[in-house]
Image 1 (cartoon, one colour):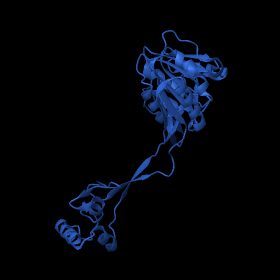
Image 2 (image 1 turned 90 degrees about the vertical axis):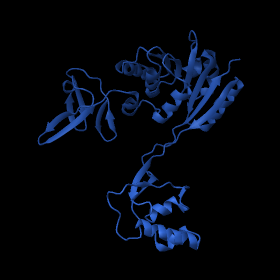
Image 3 (image 1 turned 30 degrees about the horizontal axis):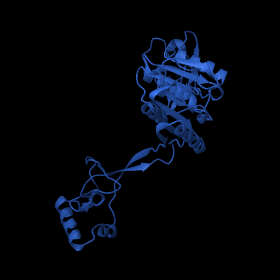
Image 4 (image 1 turned 60 degrees about the horizontal axis):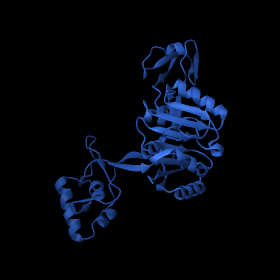
Length: 325
């Protein structure tokens, strides 16, 4: 995986004599051979020097640098899937809908070195490209990728059964019965669907086939920025912070005792104070009031949601467990 800049990742398979084209120019693969991961590969363009950084291809980096042949799953969904499917080294897993191989690569790392992933893709061209990716990433020994329309033909029976089944199909409820035949007792099932109608049909089929612990999740990311603000509320606002005359008098005494009634700005050496949005009090005064009036001292750190940058809805994840009886 090659890092080219902020949120700019790409990948390549290093071969002696080949070239890598980036936004900063053309780098020869010979420049990468023998260099440790994380080192800067520099190239001069007259007086200007540009560089890229080779990184070890982890599943997380592969997800953000792979070629998108289909819509892919990202880290938030992948982490929940591997956790709720109870995957561990040695697990045997069935997957329908290989796609670009984002989830397949993460599953392979989780179940290696003694587990195995049997993944199926109905598009033969995508299946062949996935095989090449698995080989280049060094996981072909734990992943078998086959061309098969699972919706029409179902899963082939795996000797000894499997520990988990994952479906990324347009009609997952059609394949639930085939998945149950391969699951071992207490084996886990997961289906990814972008539409709630697909979820309803899948849950209904799971209930008919006596699956237990059926539950659906939707993951939404929300990123927060941490900003620093130094301010003091106006006198009118300060009066409303304390509802009684006795509380206001006590607050003024504390202000004078701590020296916070001076108009000089806070020192740069003062420590930051994190202000919770709701609740919390100290000495009969709200925490926000103490910090804003200078009693807590120092600038205020306020967490605010980002306006842009967070990914929205990708789909619903439905989990279930095969009953023992």
